[in-house]
Length: 207
Image (cartoon, rainbow, N blue to C red; front, side):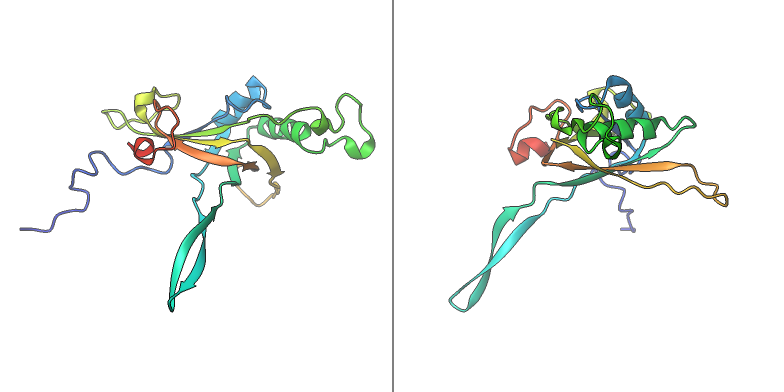
């Protein structure tokens, strides 16, 4: 029997999952207007499945140590990166969101009453960021806005709040494009199938 490639088995019926086959969907982020939801969807270049982590507590009995599961860390942060265009539309959308959900940029100057510090007037609500993990069709092609049968998993982050907009450094010696990053806090995350009713059943979630 000759040496067989690790890829020659029924687990990899199609090529392994590439990191670039995903899309970030914003249409459930209620604090973003529709134009900004579409814009950020098109401009996003990175996302992630957040880490799952639980704390363990050592207990001692009969001269032996036993590790018991304690609290799980359900809340965390999510950073999304974007490529900017020539009009800096991503910058405008993120700054507008910041003005709605954090201290308005006009606050130090007093600002206008209708635009200053609206964090006290706009409820954050259940803002969701959704990352769809794409899978190929029969021709091994990936595409955005795919039907559910070309999406393998949906990662949903609940109760998101923007907490940081990354800095941008301009440099005459650089040939790189302008990029932006925005960091959001979230209360919890779910991993589901496209057609699945959200459930806490592990077998159902990963079927």
